[in-house]
Image (cartoon, rainbow, N blue to C red; front, side, top):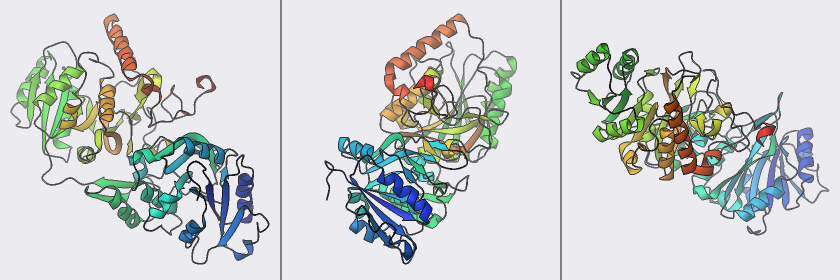
Length: 520
């Protein structure tokens, strides 16, 4: 059997029509490397002789469903890595060469996926993130461009037979056996999918619930259909009684915003085991002072004065130091609630031991997207994914409608366990008083070994100016420049190589479009 020093690729092709089969086989025969074999599985015995004279192609016919003899094929496969394709899929001419070269260099790889294009009315490029567990739990972003080590496939206890869910179920079964270091990604389009794309993954919820039980050990959950037809939702459950959540709201006057925010938390949120800590930064308006005095009568609300100059980081640190909750929810005073389960969803995600910061889906008042995770490097430092998109959009390959990992989320609405906040020593109140403190905090959490994530099932409105065209004083502009320089100096190249993004996507806009020629 070939070793990782002599990588050999087995291509298992499920064929459904002569024309489509021929297009795929022709692309394979033109590979720049010869370290491959083709195993063609057809649904008509008449096709058995299609490539009888070609010694590179072995043809098999199914008898009880296309995948009924998958284990037989694995026994016959000679390759150290195996990929499963459908007729009509086209491999790049250098596919085998690039894959084998990669696996020789990174010899711990057991699963490798590549970027793709999709052949339809309009060609669509799919630039995938690096390993993104929570994305895969909800949506088959791997698609068909996946190679599995033969050793890995032989460890699987059983393989799904349903053609509609085969690729997704196989991927989930496989990653349950792997460490992060064994999952790799080539950020290059090496496969063009046939028009029929089988990312659809919610055809058998019972099957996926069974598979997820091996992934989320000791974490109670339910499987349900997702927001769109080709996604699923892994809904994590909290133990009873619910843990206490400390909601920290910084404010200075703007009573019209603060009152809506507090009322929405109290009366439009289903999660009830909360305390609200209002950090008051020198409010001066009589109506605000009267309101702050009145809410002290509510046992769930505490007003904490912060009498120094504005320092968002210091205010958050003060709030957490006073908090009694196991969980911390940071909430801007200009936030209002859309769906009552927003906090339940965020806490249930943050309760998972591997998860750090959890961010919400935030909308502008006009219904367009304000925040769906933070992407590093955008606009020079960091910016919000899908900013300005329509509310009905599913985003770039469903990123607006599924839970997925991101490098950072905005502190306008962020939930994290208090012990994690303290572990990374909270926000940087010396160097990042105003800007980028949430990005820095999230990166510290990730550096500590936790995954940050965005959830579309927590929806709120952020009453923030879209243009950000606020006039800043000379000193404010100077402060912003200093904090920007500090962030870049501290995190360096990471700001321009976000693993939750893709190097082929633009850093000029928040719309996930491919890089312009001037960026390459």
